[in-house]
Image 1: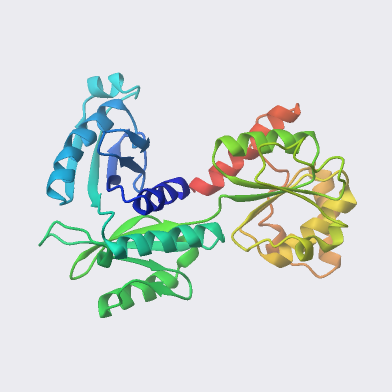
Image 2: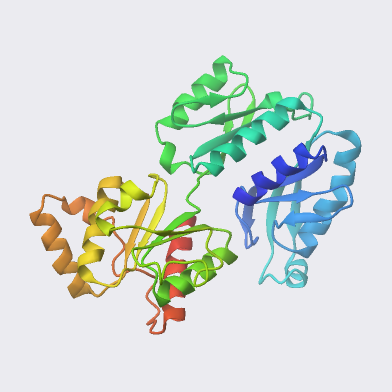
Length: 345
């Protein structure tokens, strides 16, 4: 979602209109989930994917009509088992797709996507709300809103006020869905969990950073040793920090609550110091490398210092999906697989 919003904002700034294909519903073995997006340009080039050659070819064919009429289309695509085999899927399924025209001359469109991109850059979670009116079959910038836990951007009205109030009651657990009131509204959570802080700059950290770069996850590496924490060793990392001491980690590096933290320092004592700060920071995900005996030892120490068991239960330790990993490369794969699992669930 991060790259899609960044792409839309960039194209609108360049005054290039686009069609956005969004999966609204799926059943069977369709490969992508509701909320998955793909950008279609006038030359029929694409960014992103909604799940395969055949489905995308059908969507692109309809996109030419959307460019011409500037009206959205909602189409149901049924992939037979034979179709699915051609697309590289095991068996078929049904997918409902919205093809939305996004006008680059609509100032409110530009404003709303600029705000969405701005929120992503500062790592703030938000929800994009889009009104889908069956009366006009047109979606304009005034039909979009951004809701954060404290603010709303867009032209407010009574129904939007009710919707945003209900969203805030369960803000951190929202999923893509369609809200039906007087009108239909697409509700798309845009969680900025794609910001990962790797604390410790050893061999495993190098492999994690290489993988997360490929996944488009904004990756920050932190260590107290300059000879380890540098761009030469971490060329793919978005940020590399050398701190004076792990004791002051959260003072030296601004880590927001919606971040992921992977603790892979060079020793138990450093892990404990970082874990204690991460627990106080209430970040979205905390994972710590180590054995079960190490976990029990550190947890007992933290409990004696006043931490609660319910907080410790939220920590992923031993970190990673259990695949009997041994090498730094294998351990990194298991850790990144867990990050994906947590994100998707």
